Every structure is written in C-alpha cells, then in structure tokens.
Image 1: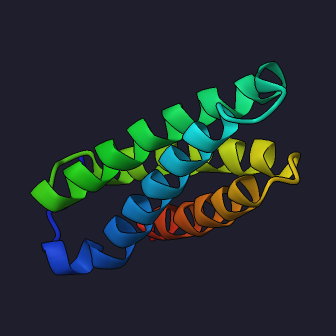
Image 2: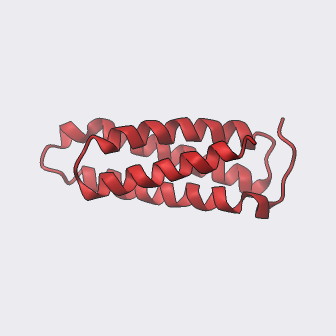
Length: 113
C-alpha cells in the first residue's frame, strides 16, 4: 500500500489527469464526427479508457487512497497507449489529446518516486 500524502502533494498529477480526461473526451466526440468513423474506432475506445483511468487516479489522489501509485502507473500506461494511437491521426484534436496524454503519463510516473 502507498503511504498517505496530502492533497497538495498530488496537485500537479491531479491537474494533469483532469486535463487529459478533458482532452480525451473532446477527442472521442470529435473522432465520432470524422468522415471515416470506423477508422477512428480504436482512438475513441482508447480515449474512453483513458478518461476512466484518469478520473479514477485523480479520485484516489483527491481522497488520499491507499492505491495511488498503482493507479497512477496504470493510468500512465493507458495514457501512453492513447497518445500513441492519437499520434497516428492528423486531426488537431488527436494531436492535442496525444500531448495531454503524454504530459499526464509523465506526471503519473513521477508519483512512483
């Protein structure tokens, strides 16, 4: 189990998770409006997974939960997968999402140290 930390100690990671979740929500909705929606299916699915992971990790951090580090590491892995998929697409919303996901992954991995 992780040692408890104050909410302030998690602020940067919570902020990154919330920004990533917002970017992924925007990306998913925007992908669904693309001409070739089927081509964007994996992007939408990963966006949705990433939103769930970010919200879960941010919630645990806000509550000072016992599993902050493990949830952040899982979140980082999901963010990396989402960023990789988003980078495959030229759409501005995908590129913005990839950037937010990468930033979140860095913050989440920093929680381990």
